[in-house]
Structures are given as C-alpha cells and as structure tokens.
Image (cartoon, rainbow, N blue to C red):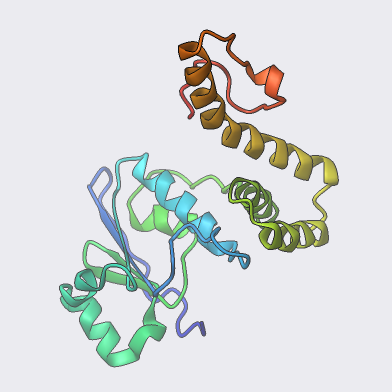
Length: 213
C-alpha cells in the first residue's frame, strides 16, 4: 500500500485527560500481522503499542474494513476521508475524533504524545527480528511448513541465531503440546493409568498449574 501522508497533525492534550484512540485499518485478515507467510513487522509493533496505551488507561478502538465495514460507514470523519482519498487514506488514526495520521502507522512516541501521557514513551522491544521469532513460533503452532521456511529465511537474513530460533520453536511446541497432554491425562485418569508429565512428552513452555493453556 502506497503511503499518501506522513503524520499530518501534532496534537496536545491536558495532563491526565482521558483520550480515545480509534484506528481504522485497511482490509486484511487480522491486525496482528503474523498470519500468513508474509509478515509486515510494522503491524505487530503497532499492536504492541496500542496494548501499551491501553495498559495506561487510554481507550482503544480498532476496526478492520474487511470485517467491520459498518464502523467505517458510521463514522462521518472516516467517510469523508474515504470519499476524498479512497482506501489509500488507511490506516487512519483518530484521537477524540480528530485525524492525527493517515496512510501509515505512527510510532509509540507519537501515540503517547497525542494521548497526553507523561514522559517519553519507552521504545518497544518488538523489533523486526523479534517479529520473525514470533512468526516462527506461530508456524510451529499452525503446522505450516511453508510459513516456517519463509520466516526461517527472513530471520537468518536479519542475523537471528539458530539457537534463538530453536528456543522459539521449543517454546511454541511446548505451548502447543499442553492442551493435547491435558486431554491425554484426562483419558488416562478415567482409564486408571498414570498421568503423563511435560518431561515425559518432551514438551516445554507451560509450567504445571500456570494456567497458560
């Protein structure tokens, strides 16, 4: 998608005021950016930035044109942008109904400034290399061989070590194995057989009783 505009407005806000951030995405399968073989590292970074804002009390709303067209049609500002510039105006970021950026995803620092948060926003740890490690883990969880090969190659080109990729693989496999091990143990309990622990199945990633799965 061609970027049609940089950040168009620098907003200010009163300290401690409550802000609403609305994001109107172009049509896509999901906002995480890690589904499918071609990951845009900007998307998981931006999703992490929104989660960071939400954790600091900012009201977040996010809409996908492919899945929630009514939200676009029901917002006068968004309708006007689409009528004037078309889908190239997306993603569109509004703060309290005011357009702050169009055509690209702003940085965490700008989001923090527009939301009236005190201090400089810390830089996100979600780098392009980290995004590829997450995608490698997701490939294992999804049993997607082409996805794994694609993200392995991208991670290698970014300088990610085989050791770090293997850690991502093992963690993903451990999380993936946990529910299967749980139902297996249910069956073994009912049948009067000893339960199987994580060490027995070779899985790692979910500690017993952690509640992660």
